Length: 477
Ligand code: ADP
Image (cartoon, rainbow, N blue to C red):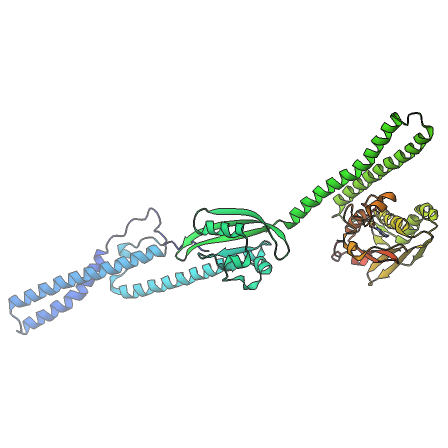
């Protein structure tokens, strides 16, 4: 929208132009003298008497004077006004020539035309700039006319509502009472600005904050700008934070309640029961260890989240790291009679990575493979190159597998396929969330495949150093 054009005013302090008397006189002489001369010649030729010749000459001179005054005044006014419009100082009486007034008027009209063209160019430039700015905004912005129809829409709005919304009533794009009420109130002039928070069920239940602002009324009536700010990600993050605190408290409250219960039992009814004391203390030790694991995992998660945008700078060879990770979990595997089989391509180059973090990734995955794999079946660990510039570490178990619908959510905090089983096995529900954040920090990918009854494979892909300068792979979802 543009502001109504204002006529440029004469610069302050300029004196008002005086009527150009000399130019009037020159015109008067030019008009009057030839006629007076003709009458004089007529008199000399005897065609006129003295009296009538002087009367006619007087009348002609008077008419010429008046005509010259009228003509000079009219031109003077036009030129003075155009000077004002063009923003120049008022024209002084000596600055222009009455004899070439027509030429001067022509030149002034040409200057006016040029100015108009320049202004049109400026308006077009402003309009293009405004369009570019609106299109650069990530949030949808609509321009509404007097009748609540969509007159313009930026790129984000066209992407969200579709290209064919222009010219339609706002209700076609957003049939939401809060939106329509806000737009109507502003367009009717009841308020200069209206806002609301809303969730649009179509197309995908996104949350927005909405603001409608009135534009200066023009000859075409009122108009308003409607801007939407997408709050979906913010709301999701808020919900995740709230869920996280609720989950973490719940996870800690359960073993804590169990500890308090056993302490009270040991202080009360089981005070002198030696066998019960030994059994309860064993359970209490397990519960305390579970709380310690949970707190350790929460700390790891928060630390890795803080570093997530900061890619590690050191390099590490994966084959020895995997051997160490497997060795650390050998006792658990042996307890379930599960052999750990390593198939490692030793010729592969090192990757960019933090040793402790990658160790945590592979230990979590191998630990899960042992926990959820069937006893007496192997855990297979492989290191290979894939897609030319990625290394892949695969950890495969032969357990019950994971139903397909759970796969996309496995890396969410505290998400478990079978909560009771996970807790019985000492799981915190945070292992894969930690894995996801560490892999994100390494610009890698996590691929999970599973077949019910057959087992699961967790594949960690890390970019080879040749890719270091290239953009990272998509983050693990
Ligand atoms: P937990 O501490 O419960 O193991 P994780 O974050 O490591 O937490 O894993 C989340 C859930 O994913 C587990 O509770 C389990 O249901 C499932 N899961 C992880 N790894 C496997 C696997 N190898 N086989 C079957 N299910 C698995």
